[in-house]
Length: 154
Image (cartoon, rainbow, N blue to C red; front, side, top):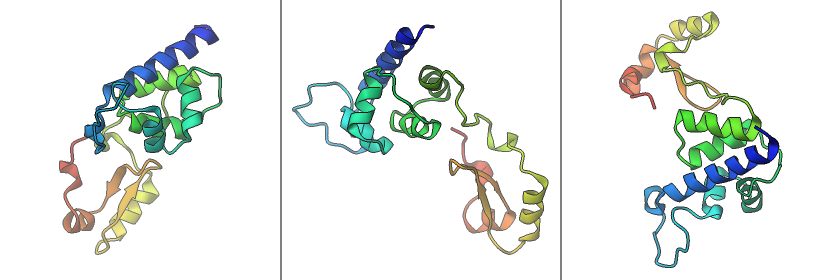
């Protein structure tokens, strides 16, 4: 896909996803003066923690540099599913998403972290990845907080 086509597809995708989110679903008043369906650009930018100008440029399909961390934030703000997030990454960076789509029981902790969890018998311990997803815990954490095995994935 050439550069122009890729940026146009990115623009269309972001506009479409933004229009699909109802303001009430994220705690905003619907308001009677909305000229656009779904969220406004500034609302998406605020949810993603980026400037309105920068998000507008991205949505307009301008050739700007974007990091995977910002794309993760935009993915959350637009409530994207895994395949939609991959599509966003493909359009914006021409790569796959860095967020693993594995279930909790598929994530493999390294042996030293497993040993630490086993040693901390009486201290509730939770291990998270860089996206704050819980990837490991010990029985004390399950007892004090909740049984993390029962939390649905995605």
